[in-house]
Image (tube, rainbow, N blue to C red; front, top):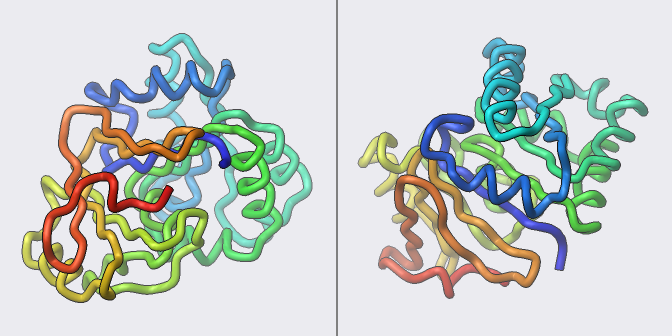
Length: 221
């Protein structure tokens, strides 16, 4: 069934992200591998520093892996680090850049292999968006191709701060039967190893199917 998957609505590594402690315990790891790929043009080192401080407070170490471009996604040392990791975290930033770097790369293959082998995988904002397919295009709220680790589900992050007009457009444009999940900041939608879904954090999660609210049972197993 794969490992644990956490789709975070944004504002990662801040007070209220109570789920990170649980994810650490589920991973059995003392180190979190941070991929600031989506933040490549937004001072990725700052994302790593933020993660280091946050996880240090939880008694764990965070290590940045600077997979910022396509050569980095095919670098043998980076690929090996991803394959061996037990807790991998994709930061926020640009989902389009994240997709372009990882799609059909050796790093992506290693990430999928690690997750299917039982690792914990978390993606926040852009990370959550790109892990799914289809992916919400942040430029206008329509849909585009995602990486597809989790298919037949789409994510609207930052739902508590996202433009209401853009959210309505995304929900209206969704293909028939596609669950569109709106996730608040500092909140995680978590798929356990048994395929069941749950919510943790300070905010809420709303699932929309065909323009109407639905429960977590509408999500793929």
